[in-house]
Image: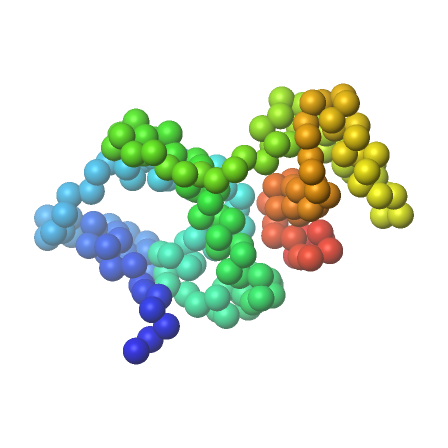
Length: 182
């Protein structure tokens, strides 16, 4: 038996669109009628992703390419592909959560929110994080966040994770372990 992953999303073809052909198929033969509202909301959520994230989604889910193929064409290490996929799915989950709640009355667990990302002073806090040098400890930053912003951070890993995964580079690229875009 194969690895358990679908290599091509047949449901996309069934609703009348084959991404390999980049055109609509004959819709009258389509076994299901696509819900235009769902399609519009998913497209809207996809539009909010960075270009490289959209490209990953297109290649992996719509074209059925493997991690190896995507890694080679996008210049990303294959060891990072699963983490990238998980982060993009979580991002889409958060973007579509209110729509799912309103349309289907389903609560979506979007996981814990980053205390920095939800702060109205996010840009100011990001500048504070950037001002820390490699030789300094996180203790003064954590203390300042508590005193000046009312944000309680218990471990530096939260700050490191925010910088690594939430604070995207300007070009929307993926970052490697050192925080460098590739």
